[in-house]
Amino acid sequence: MNKRWFGLIGLLALAILPSRAWGQDDMSFDDQGGDDQGGGDQGGGDTMSFGEGEGEGEGEGEGGDSGGGLAGLLGTTPTTTSTEPMPEDQIVDTASLPEPEIWAVQQSYVLRDGRFELTPTYGISLNDPLVTHNAFGVSLGWYITEVLGISASFQWYQGLGSESEDNFHIARSFRLVVPINEYEMGANLHFAYVPIYGKLTIFNEWIFHWDAFVMGGVGMLFTRPIPVVDPEVRTFDFGIRVCANIGVGARIFITRFVAIYIQYLDYMYMEKLENLNIAPEETTDRNDPLWSSSRYNSSTWLGESKFTNDMMLHVGVSIFFPFTFDYEFPK
Image 1 (tube, one colour):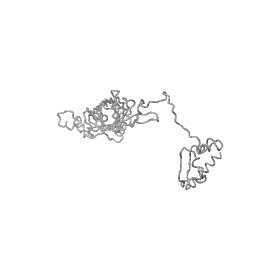
Image 2 (image 1 turned 90 degrees about the vertical axis):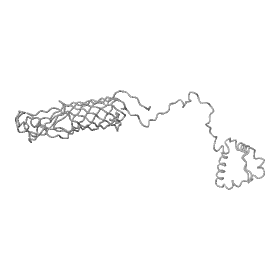
Image 3 (image 1 turned 60 degrees about the horizontal axis):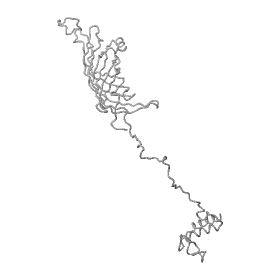
Image 4 (image 1 turned 90 degrees about the horizontal axis):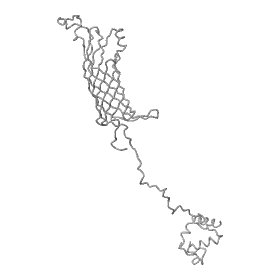
């Protein structure tokens, strides 16, 4: 134990007074003992030796402590090197493992390119407070690319519209008549562009994919005025009105081929309205000179044409086919 204390004191002295260590003329770290060179001057010789013989002699002469010297102070050096081979069942061949899949951007849930879309719908009019123009419809579309498509639609209106009570009360209370019209059917050609698609979560549990599109096109409507000024005499037939349409829509996909469909379209056309004035003559003879101003002459029944907007909200279900599709690139 004393040997350890002396060693520590010696190390501290060397750290405090480094000039004494630098003043040694010769320092040897050979394997020879210190008896040949250290016999004369033991107090301040020119040679310092750390031979194995000296270290072993001192260690054994000071009480037989095998851990003497610097090795005794620091203890034995542990070793982690093992020469035993690892069992073969614990060796993993990393070359046989598959490469990890890293999905930086997920694939689209639904592909539209080259697929057909069949959409039955029901539509209601939004902007006419005096009469409603509800309709059953169906459209068939085909996507030329992933974002561009064309479609044709057909709507049936007759028998589904109705006059509002406001029209009756206004005419009765203020003696004012507002000309209104009704639709029979419509057919349109549309061009669609899908600029946005994504996904949404509901109640933090269900995830649905959706897309949004803009649509525009041309078509025709079969309409006629509803006689309200002189209903006892006047009757009107349906006529063709050329119309343009523009709108937006969205789909929420339930599966890869079924989606909830919602669409807003504005049909714009020139409507022929009922004449608010009643011809003064009552003659029914076409050969009568007064026939041109007779209330029975149908040429006096129509008034001016007016630019009309028919804003429709269509709701339905989209069915894509083929039902399945293949991705061009793997995940």
